[in-house]
Length: 396
Image (tube, rainbow, N blue to C red; front, side):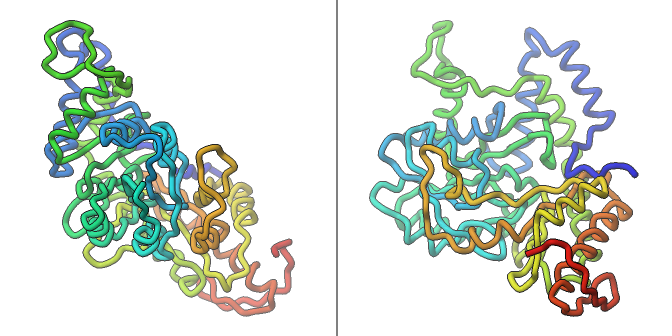
């Protein structure tokens, strides 16, 4: 039985050819050739004027926050459901992450909770587009405008997602992206900072080069203390190839999600998948199943069953307020975030995944879901038939 990975990149002949060229020839006068090309191509893809490639999405966020002047004593609002990479740069600049609750359908920031959390110390709102779902950007941008607070888009997981005709990452004061090996578009490791604000772009560009301003004629003369978050020409070469295939890569992610939606349709009254609201497009980076509260579901039992069948699975992000880490806020009143993480799992999704692999995953979900419900002696329609069992699976 072949293993079903939770994700892996799609690397073809074009990526190999560009990377080989960068390794053989991308030095001297050509040392930034693929970097410049990748930045211009990605900016065009998003329809924004400025893009700066970085070594990670985290680095892009760090520089963006620093360029906005956010620091000690300031507060930055973000969702309690997040990967630590979103919160860490806030702590790095000396500010305080303020954690608020999420919406139950998109798993993204709840605008009502955001506005309630604003204080005179609030200096930014970070809107994380989770697993491909997009935040309620109209409401968040309106809150930001009324309070004079920049809205930042963490679009690490949202390549291919859009909101009212604009791509995720292109709506806020700035956006950041990840090109980690798990992402829809990859450079192995890497990220991108994007903005439509020229002054902000120039500040981040200076920070990204150890504080050396563009146009400085004195060699090795920094204007400020900066960072070293650059992407290599080799990574950018792979990115250029991936960008030429971006429509194909996004389409395949969406196709895989539709396979899951069809395969899991018999369980639609017991679990929900990623949502795509009208006027939005979900890039479906990571198909995710959230079991409803009335279902007697055990996440660890499903993950164990996946492992038994050579299938990878991932837990839904923990609420950041649960982590005992210095600089993070807790406890907080975020009932949706604290109620969802144990009922959710990320499902495998990689570009050459087909119907057979999706059906293997779905079959295990149907089996475990059937067991958990029938523990309570309730009939459940699964896989097209009603089954009643009294088997105990050690589920709570």
